[in-house]
Image 1: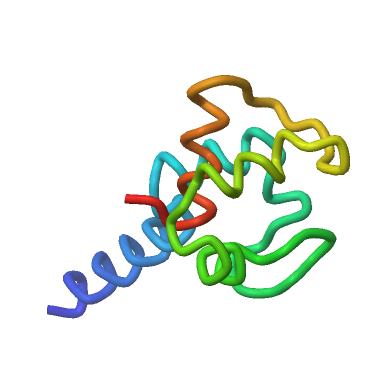
Image 2: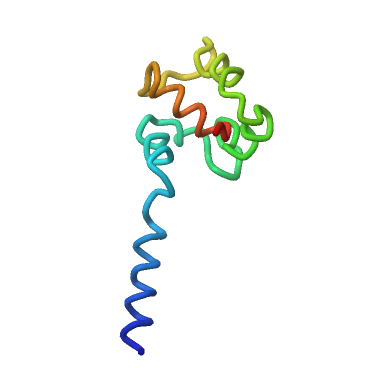
Length: 91
């Protein structure tokens, strides 16, 4: 029983350190997470705030991301649309 509990605890630690989704991993890889955190405002708005503001409307958010005032990120085209959709909670 003790071994089972230790194994489950270790599995939980490993799972807790993995990204929640492939979209989250891509968001970080593209450099978005340098400015945008999940819960708190950093250099840019938090994912939570973006979700509330855009309510899943990735089109409105795309205008901001592709605008002249947004820093360059390592994504283009459909990949960029997917990242923006992740950030604003698009389904």
